[in-house]
Length: 493
Image (tube, rainbow, N blue to C red; front, side, top):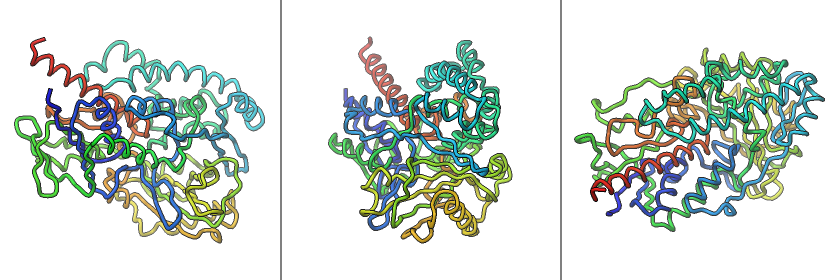
């Protein structure tokens, strides 16, 4: 068979892994068109002189899923230098309590008995229940696509949804396991990893906090963005055509097919197209009568501080969470009132503690993330006061004399994210609400166009790097089956 020409619009991790999987099969001629000067999408670095730090994702969850997909794409597990973070992270509460999370269950039970007596049995019940639900959820929702929506509404799937208690939200579910509101916060904040409100995210997303304990939290040496470099090197070896600074301007549709793409003033013939931009804004590539025109709710945004430091702080974990006096109030301001939070919780990432490649000798890098509203309701010219409040908090609660040790700092807000192509400035695609999850989320073939597909954080199964990679696997498998079926049809088999 002649290899079909597959054009991937956007060089984020979803598009790159799709190219990796298909190129390993040798079934397609593949071209990637990326509007920016480098690949990676959300996975890229912020750099300044000798400092570099991840711009977006930092925490690696579901490492086995990530590694298995890369292996299926022809990469060696040994070439992916990940290491377990032990302990997982510290949570600091305003009352002075620090709670540490561990992958080791004995250590975690000891920590619970010491800090939150009376919650050990709830924790054990949480692990037992979630183990069953994780296996069910993965089989029925992560390992399957729902291009045919009827395949979602089967009796078995409905029964699984009931077992997963998707009619509850994450916070309500966690209150059934823990009797201290601080612990409830510690086991619900993980919805923020994918930009969701703990009170609005279906209970199936409580599996994220379970995964931390069961699969661990990992760090990729060189930063998460190093994964892009590793995949790109492999694609170049396979003669996948990578075009940077090449923005696709138009996808003309004729007789329910895209026959060419418009890029750099040229019309390039193609057989299939994969959209890997943030999905809701991909509508702009079509004529009015071809657009989806659906209203989506964006995920939360992030106010991000990147710092180059004259030293490293002697903590025993690279990940820390600093909780506010009123986490519910913070979430309300982000998701309902859509204003800058007055007293926010925030996350810090200090990878130079375990990775000397990120900064000049003896120096370090530090990243701080504050959940903030997406959209246009905030005047980002007024962010300076919040930045100063956060640095004050960091100095008081974990990073003494921080200001005097900052050699470089850059601030990134949702306005910058939107300018870079993220939907409404949300950092995680569309929000993981009930009616933007599972079958209700855009699928790998989101338009009634025969040869057009999609992958990415806003496409099923959802956000988070390994989950986006799983979406790329679903798409690759679909394209392989489709090609085989077409081949058999032509042969009359």
